[in-house]
Length: 335
Image 1 (spheres, rainbow, N blue to C red):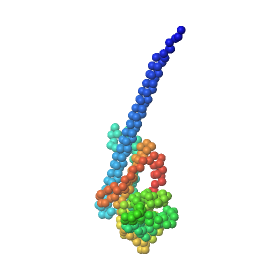
Image 2 (cartoon, rainbow, N blue to C red):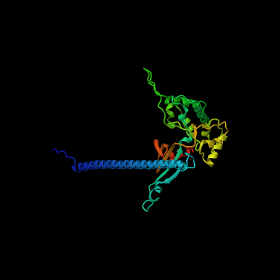
Image 3 (cartoon, rainbow, N blue to C red):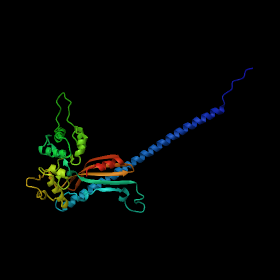
């Protein structure tokens, strides 16, 4: 007698199907939660970035106001003098952002965000301007090449570095000409800041060593006797030795030079202060604003031009750093 085949238990199949459905629902739910969390994180990061940008923009506007008021004050005193004892030259030490806000019971240092703001204004004409090293046609200017060579020597760079830089930037700044037929050679891209000398084959170590004393501005500018370092003064004034440069530095600490004639009295007759190479005032300033949020640091660096009461932003860059990296950069920055 034959027995009919047994059918698989329906109860076990139903349980297996329920488990599969549960796994699928859990997977889909987990994916949705992950997507939602990711969207929230992106939104929070974007909001923090926008807020940081607004804060740094406000800090830049505040710097422009300080420079504008300084110009009005100098004009009221009858001389356009910029020195290191003026308000713009005092750096803003790191302070909690909430201390800058209105003081009330709902907005104080304890309830404010964990954000810290710092910044500084530096006279760009306290450094020697690399734009002076070549003429409009791209040919090196002998006196300025000697000045750059002196700074290269102070920085411990090899002999011939100054002429090498002059030739490189001269080729980039020379008037553009159409390449000859059948050739594809093009002139190098002109640098707009000192770090971009790397485009011309200048090594990073050379740029780093020159940074404390050299800058690159959009136009030729003189060195400010009231703010420049001793090494820069020696490069800007032909024949100036370290002793005479130190005499100028000590004299301006007692009282800033109101004119070149006053500074000239402290020097031997053989050392002439040329008006096109040195001055007692400035029209270009470097502004750095830094916002620290937990372990992230957002730093904005701007180049400002001041003409009379008008202060215009000519260059602006923003850098995001880790707090540890930012501290290292600050420690190694030139004073």
